[in-house]
Image 1 (cartoon, rainbow, N blue to C red):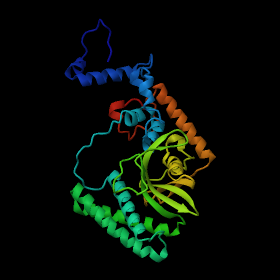
Image 2: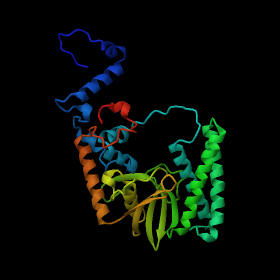
Image 3: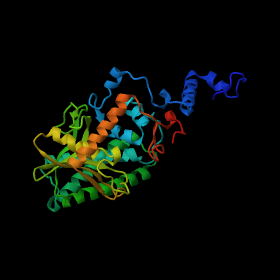
Image 4: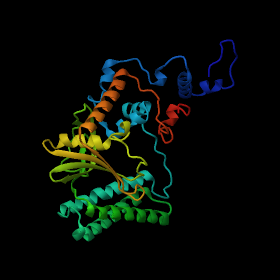
Length: 341
C-alpha cells in the first residue's frame, strides 16, 4: 500500500488507477492500518459542534435496535444509525423462509390475530375460549402466508408448505401458553415516532418519546399487557434465546425491555409500569423470556448507557472497536474491512 519514493511502480498500482472509488477505499484502508496515529479512517473526525449536536441522543430519535449497535461496535453504530447505510438487497430465488422473513411473518400473524381477538372481546385467552382463539390464529396464518407466498413466489412448493407448517406449530404453542399467563393484552404494535398507518395500534403517536434518561426514542412495542393496573411491554423474538441471562441491559446489547418500559411511562402518564420483557416465542427460542423490572437499578443502567453514547457522539469518536464475535454477521464488514476484528 505504501512504498518509498525511490521505489518503482508496484505490481498493484493499477488498482489505484482503474477506479477512483476503489483507489479511495484502498487509501482509506491503508490509513486504518497505520499504527502511528488515529485518523478519520478510525472514526476520529474533525469536531463540528453544530453537526454533532444534531445527532445527540436527545436531539434526534433513535430506535432501540440502532442504539444496540453501539455496544457491538461504535463504528457499526456510526455507519448504521448516523450515516444510515443499509446492506444492498440481492434478489435470490426463494426456496424456504429466511430467518428475517419467518420472523416478519410470525410478528404479522401475532398482531392481526390479537387485534381480531381484541375486537371480539376475547382477551385474555383462557381455556374456555382457547379453541376460538386457535381458530382465529389459524385463519390469520392462512391469510398472511398467502400474501407472503404471492410476494416471494417460492421455488419449491413442498419446502414452503413445510416451513409454514412449522410456523403454525410455533404460533399455536405460543397462543396456548397464553392461557397460563395472568397478564391481559391491551395494545398491539404500539408505535411512537413512526409513520402512523392502519397496521398500528390506535394509541400510537407520530411523535417520538423523550425518555427520562435523555434518549429520544422511536419504535413500536409488539405487545402491551396489564395486570392489577400495572403495565408491561413485551417484544417478541423468533430467534434463539441467549445461553446466559443478561443483566438489565447487557452492557447496552439488550435495550428493548428497558427502553420500552420507560417509553410506556411517557405514553401512559400516571400508570405504573412493572417491566419490559423479551419473549422468545418459538420452539427455537424454547419459549424463554427475559424480564427487566422498571426499578432504580434499571434506570441507573440506562442513564449510564445514555451518558456514554452521548459522550462518544459529542466527541466525534466512534471507532471500529468490535465486541467479541461482533464481526461474524456484520452487514458492514465490506466497508469496515476484514482485519479489524
